[in-house]
Image 1 (cartoon, rainbow, N blue to C red):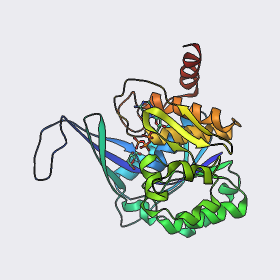
Image 2: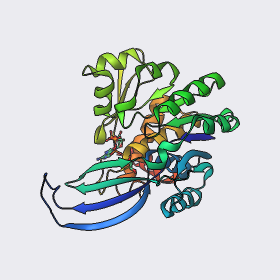
Image 3: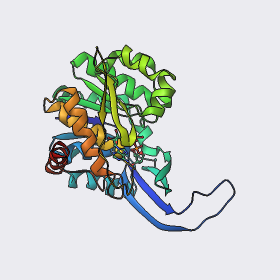
Length: 295
Ligand code: ATP
Ligand code: RIB
C-alpha cells in the first residue's frame, strides 16, 4: 500500500489564447472545474496503475470537499483518512491555460487545517505502507512530523518538493527519494545541478519536462529520456510522474526502469485535459514502453 499525505484541491480552469498582462482583460474559451491538488493527483495516478492507495488529507464542509472525496473513492483511493475540517473552504487552484503552458495560484484553505494529531491517528496505516508520498501543499510542520514518524517506522518517503518554498535541507536525512523539477531543484539547492545530484546519488531525481528525468547513480549521471507526444495539457504531468514512480518502485523495479515507467505514464497524461484526465492505467503504460522499445 502507498499512503499519500497531501493536498486535495478543486482546480478552477480557464483557457485563453493569450495570458493577460497586468491590468489587461482578455476573453477566454473555456471555464471548468476538475479535481486536482498535488496529493490527490499523485494518489489517483498510483491507484490507476494498480497500487492500493490510502489518502491522508483535509477538505472543507463545502460541496467541493464532498465532490473531491467522491472522486478519490471513484478512483479506488481509500479516503477514510480524509478529514472534514469545519470553518475552512476546500483548497482550490486557479489555473490559467494558454500558449501550451499553465499559470497556477493555489489557495490552500482546508489543506492547511491538517494537523499533527491526525497524522498520529494514521500511524497504523502508515506503518503498513510500502511508501509514503508527500508534496508541499500542506503545512510544513505536518511534513516535518510525518517525515520523522516514517523514519521511526522505517517507511521510505518519496517527497515531491512542490511548491519548493517551504523545503528545508534537513528533510534530506529523512527522505528516500526527492523529485523536484528543474526550477524547484534550483530554488532548493542552487544553480549547480550536477554537483547536487552527485551529493545525493539514487535519491535526487530531477524531472526535465519533455526531456524526461535525471539522477546520479553513484558512478555516472543517468538521463532517462522522455517520450515524444502531442501535448494537450501539461497540468499534473509531475504528479503522474510521481504517482507512477512510487507505484513502480513499490512493485520492485530498479530506479532506472521505474523512472522510465514514470516518464511513459506522464507522457500519456499530457495528452488529455485536466490534472487527472489523462492519467493512464498500467496496460497503457506497458504499450507505450513496448512501442518505444520497437522504434
Ligand atoms: P507540471 O507542473 O507540469 O505537472 P512539473 O513541472 O512538476 O510538471 P516536469 O519536469 O515539467 O514537472 O514534468 C514531469 C514529467 O512529465 C517529466 O519528467 C516527463 O516524464 C513528463 N512530461 C512533462 N512534459 C512532457 C511533454 N511535453 N512530453 C512528454 N512528457 C512530458
Ligand atoms: O500539480 C498540479 C496541481 O497543482 C493542480 O491539480 C493544482 O491543484 C495544484 O495543486
